[in-house]
Image: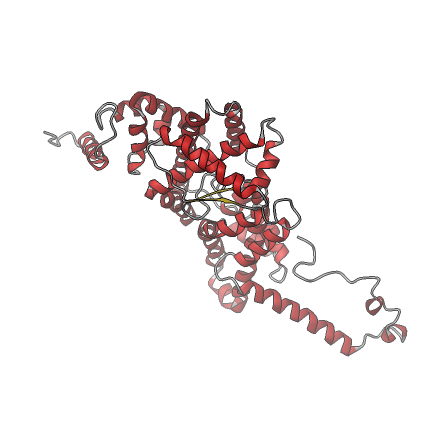
Length: 447
C-alpha cells in the first residue's frame, strides 16, 4: 500500500497551481491565501468522508466490496481476465469424458449438473460468498478483541472513534483479502483446487487460462491435463453433492477455530502506540507484522487437527478415485498426481497471505496417509464399503486411523458383511458407543 492511501497523494511539482511560481501569495512574501487553505482542507475532508463512506458500504468486520474491487483491479491486466473463447466447449467435453471414466470406480453418482469455464474474474465473483463465511468469524473475533482489551475509561473516552477504527479495520481486512484473492485467482485450476467447496453447488468449474500456464511445466498435451483436472473437479463434486454433511462440517470447523481466538492484550497496548486511526495503511501494516497473531488454544488446535484430517481424507479419496479412473487412459497421470501433491503440500504466497489473515493453512498435510488408507479399504472390502464410510461423519477415519490404516480396515469388516456396503451406519455408531461405554464402565452389562 502506498504512503498516501485511498486518493491521497503527494503534490505534483509540475502542477503550476501547486508549485508556487504562479501563486500570488508565494510571490508576495510567502503568505498563503486563506481561501486557498480552506479549499484544500475542504478537499481533504471530502476525500476522508468518501473513504469512510466506502468503509461503511460493507457491513461486518471485513469490507468485501473493497476486497472484490482490489482483486478485480489487480486481475484486470492478466491473461484470462477477459471472456473465454473456445474454452467453453473444451471444458464441457473434458468434464463429460471424466464423468464417464469415474462411473465404474465409485458408487457416488455424478454431482455436477453443469460444467463452466471460468476466468479469474469469475472465480473471485463466484467464490466470494464462501470466503465471506470463512473470514467473517476470524475477523469479527479479532476486531472484537481490540475493543474488549481496552479499559472501560478508554472505551468511554474513545466514543465514536471506536466505530471509525472498526471501519478502518474492515477496510484493512478487505484490502488484505482482496490481494490474496487476486493471487489465488491467478493460480487455482478448478473451483475445488484448495479442497473446499468454494463455488456454487453442483457446478464443475475449470480455469483454462490458469491450466494453460500450469501445463507449460508438465511436458504433457494440454488436452490430457485438462481431462485429468476435470476428473479431479468432478470427483470433488460427487463427494460434496452426495455427502450432505461434508460441506457444512468443513466450513463449521473453520468457524469453530475462530470462536476460540484469543489476542495478546500486551500486543494491543503496543499496537496503540503504532497505529494512526486516520491512516488505514498503518492498520494493515500492524496486521502484517504478526503483532495481532492469535494465540492458539488447545480447543483451537483440536479444531485445526480435525480440519486438516478432513481435508486430507477428501483429497486422499479424490486422489485414489481419479487415479483408478485415469491410470490406464492418461500416460502422464502419475506425474500429474505427484505434481499436484507437491503443489498442495508446499503452498504458494497467496495461501500464506490467507493463513495470515484467517489463521489457517488450508493444506491436507497427511494426504499421502489418507490416500493409503482409502486404498487399503478399497482393496480389502471393495469400493462399496469404501464409499459408504462417508455415510455419516462418525464413521470417517480419524487422525489416529491415518496412522494405522490396517486397523481401520479391520474394524470395517465388523460393521457389515465382507465385500458389501455398511448396511446400517447408525447401528454401527451405536455399537461403537456401546463398546466405549463398556470399556469406560467395567460393571456395565453388555449381554
